[in-house]
Image (cartoon, rainbow, N blue to C red):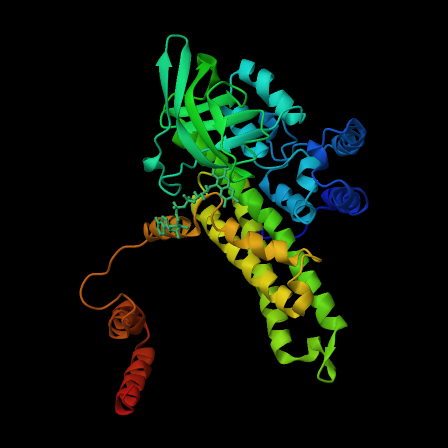
Length: 427
Ligand SMILES: Cc1cc2nc3c(=O)[nH]c(=O)nc-3n(C[C@H](O)[C@H](O)[C@H](O)COP(=O)(O)OP(=O)(O)OC[C@H]3O[C@@H](n4cnc5c(N)ncnc54)[C@H](O)[C@@H]3O)c2cc1C
């Protein structure tokens, strides 16, 4: 009977290495050179390359890619265990070659790209010689892809793209824009004529594509394949976000416990006040539930596929933002005034929680999808009363027991006696 929650010692050694590397090398880098991977300074770049080489030497680069797509092929469960370490350190995903939005773009490029496309774009993306962004949401609506209008029209040996995109994260600094059109996903170099990036919002960009001409071979995957590619991309992205969210929740929880043991009020350390204990106990339970849910989903994906696990991924998607919101809020409250400042990571964590409820799709939409999919496993009952209506259950029980009563008359007599006794007592 296989029902295991332990990590094999060999892989635990890798996790220990990652933990130590993150504490000793990655965290200090982030505090001294935020966004180091993107800094143009050649001295910083060389240092970053050295750190990345250490990661590569450990066989830990681009962990999200399966073996057949050119990665180490850890699978999702192991990746989950790694990501729950990396997610605590803002610089870690990039130092391990596993940062969004590049990961999702690389995944579809690896899965659907031609050899030529992989050579031209996947290799430089994997080596961080290029960066990419994903341009899907449009100003008139994000939740419903049927509202998207951006389209590529074939003109001789070129595609001509026209449309408008909203909230393309890191679009301004990307080399490549993966543009979801109504008729496919197209790879557009950002500097192509007709790509116009609006001044606001600064980080998640509003982009106009006006008569943008690209060669025919910039279509990724089949024509009209946008939906399939987008599902694959977003399915993976959601579970990876969730793995890193466990790390953020753990950080908020660790801070909550440390603070609760360190402050005094009204004659006791605050950990002794029951309302603080309630927050700690509830947060602990939520964190454990989230972790189990995410890792179990990761395990299920390994047994089947992300496509087969759409219900589980949907549940993970809307649960992670709620758990992060609740734990970071309680941790912030326990830190009192300090929690409201930007002198700890808590403000940021709490501010990020609502964005998690929107990025990769609004939670409401995922809830509706989950409910629809779950309901497929059920059927309506006939008549006015449900199947669990107790009088039906009793009636069925007598029918089911008939052959046993025939074989054991003394049991039948005992049943009649009990029936009479219960009826007398009105039950
Ligand atoms: C931090 C962040 C990063 C992002 N990065 C990218 C990116 O890189 N590329 C990209 O293309 N997009 C990106 N997005 C956009 C994201 O995909 C959209 O925000 C999301 O799909 C929702 O679309 P919307 O914002 O237009 O909200 P709308 O579609 O306008 O929905 C607004 C609200 O309406 C309600 N609602 C909508 N539909 C339903 C429904 N069916 N049932 C119940 N309620 C509903 C919900 O409350 C929802 O939050 C990012 C978003 C965030 C927050």
